[in-house]
Length: 317
Image (cartoon, rainbow, N blue to C red; front, side, top):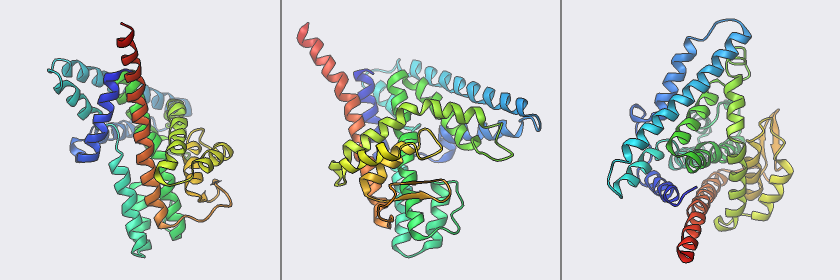
């Protein structure tokens, strides 16, 4: 973690807030998805070991290639004069995360629920945020699915890429984004993906161990800033973090459930914040607001700690 990366990370968040996401033809994550889809079509049709090895090679090879792209971009950016180099690096970094896009997608679902258009809310949450079947979900279950996705994507889609950027620059951020995209496309428990996606799923679990827990911590710490309950966020996080089958998803989702005092249930899979109130449309907006405060707090820490070290060294010099 360096002072420059802390400044670039904050600038990237500013670009995200002001500019949002580029169209898919210009978006590197869309390119990654297209490459993974093309590679999937060429996977071995039979054989557990062959499909497992192919999925592992795809995941590791693709992440390595993306790290190489990140490295080349860093080398090119280094030739720019200051402060253009920092602005360019922030612009590239912004492409591997989306906070504004997550909030916009969630708020579209909330708007449909507020308008009592449940079919449209179901369509939107399925289109933008979750992979589960939403055709029979009640309005409260749609709100719950949206809040869950906001919490989980705070970790996967924002905190994690920024965390890896602070650790290893653009190469690490690009590699993480590929690993997470591969898991989102291949990591399912069904006959088509069970063995092909096993390595991507496990590697994604590994790289998200720290970001998921940091995300839950920042959600709990930022709760009082957003007008929600930080103490309950911490308590429900500690109680329910292991309820989900994923080793990571339960951390930010349970912290969010506690902060909002809602029960988040995926029927047949988990209940987070059991005994709390059923989510309503307004809880979606609260979750988006809390996410923004949590990410801002994390960015402040990532900038503030190196700044304190820098100032301390200057004072001692």
